[in-house]
Length: 323
Image (cartoon, rainbow, N blue to C red; front, side):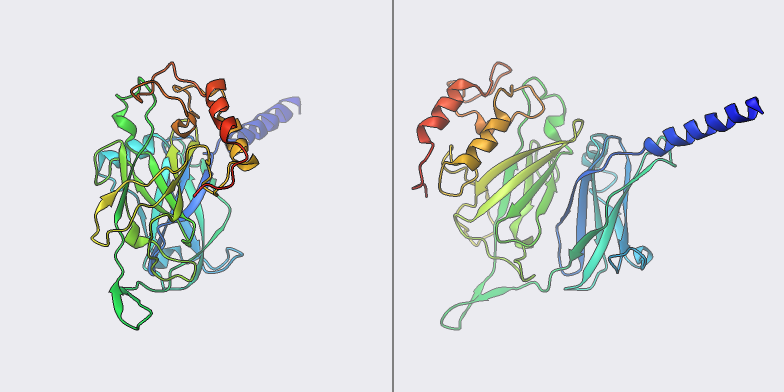
């Protein structure tokens, strides 16, 4: 009897350890939404196999996964895909969908070292866009072509880590203030590292129609970085739109107005406080808060967000006239 109890307890402990040894799932985002597709991105703590389950109802009973196309991103044969997977940065595209339709999706993260170890996210709602507009209608009734430019953005590479493929496999996520869903691009895909390249023609407004980008429109750029499950957030403005599909970098704006809301206030201080005492070689260091860099602008391992940066921030605190 005693031997039987010990065996049962051992089995229970084994099952308990297996149940908890599942890949972690964080920073789940719905993005790159079009009239016929959407993507899901997330991070995990293992070099996992990403996939998703798709449903037509919020209860998760009407599964339609087998009727749509599911494609891991980027292309599995690329070095970018290998780098992203090794960092635990997952992205999957779901296509073959109807326009202006509500779907529900759940991420599925399979540990390749233990196929029974699977992590799931909560069910996420996503609505496909309504239409792609080829032109805008002017006030006089004439038409103007709807063309946005391409955006490029270099990710921060910690000093001394330039040998790590310069950030290849990190994910750049751009969210416009007027867009319904973010856009994303892997660092090193279609452009040299450490930059990511995003086609702004894939932006859609809150009504699901193509979105025209104008100079001064605000956006956030978030970098998914592997290893620590951390992200870096940058606030930027769009440059003037040429309408010729050229490539540009977004504008930083007034330094101490970190969130670009036209004033330096408690909201900016809360952001700065999170960065205080972060060193340049740390996982959470954000160069946007390094208000006083070295003379040539190069960030070294000696850089730290410290009292000097706070002093510069403090001189501008309370301003409400920033354009």
